Image (tube, rainbow, N blue to C red; front, side):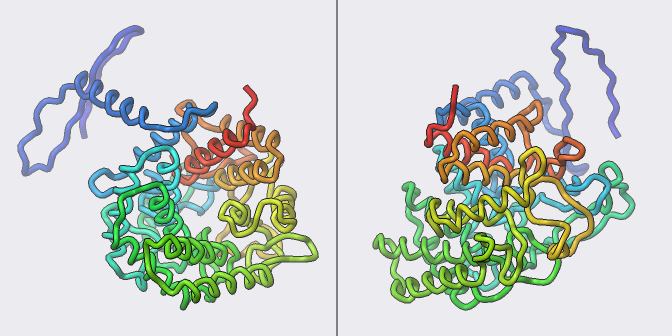
Length: 436
């Protein structure tokens, strides 16, 4: 344990440094705090200058980009979901998870946001991390890895710790690493597709990996899975998972059609049509004019908001508009933010967990995106700016917002909240929704 006492008066500037080294090593050299601070500021200012977004929400976008860069492990390019574990989604509850790992889904959408704002070097580093982690073995693809590509992420509970505000258990590791989440294939291939479309240097191994991932999906897309929300209840045929399987096939067809890869394009076109038909027939409630969380379910799920954003159906399709309005009506909190899915009612046990959770910030940004896409741009802008007002004094967002306690909850800061903030800002700016 190290103790130090010092006094700081108004107007004073005092440097305080602390160093560490393994006991069998020599102590490191004395740090130069002022020089280190200057070098750090210079690095971040130079990095921020690369941002190609200069719209009305630049401050919020830049702050979010800094968060995403800071969540990147420089030696490998791995991007963690959050730097914390077991900050609760429900204060005093048990929905507490370790997010200090690289989810393929989170990292892929982070990559997409970085590419859209001019950061190709980070995209290249992540692609290299992905290729090392997967190591040419899509049959054993995990949905998450350690920051250096570690595969063993066994989950354990630290029962001697009380948890944040007595929210137990405190967990290390994450058992979701062994789940089947078919949507991940779509997110990874979408990220690789965007990297290719934005001129990232060609990588033949990445092309080959994409085709191997599609081979796996051809065999397994009809299976139930745990889905985007990593449910710990029974596997289901989640609509979002099937939509993202369609995305994976669609983007691969585009790659082949561009002449940059070879593959069974006619067979893939048939598969793309088959998945699309299956979702529209089995995942759509015609009576209520909305897609549903899973085949045979009546419940809604906010991940359905991604259907128009992924190009599965056009924004003006009546089924898309009906789904957006149903989610806004049935999954919104009193202050207009969006829950992931019901935790009460017919399918309340879908995630296999006790307790409630707050409004999921990513889903709320998705709603703002969709509202802009269907022409309700003023409403979209108002929702987006309310979401911006939830940020703390450093511009940071957690995973969720508790409407009852009026506070952020969940692991913090959360990449999965800052990514859609960037994407929505870009969409609103492009649609002319900002009123200065």
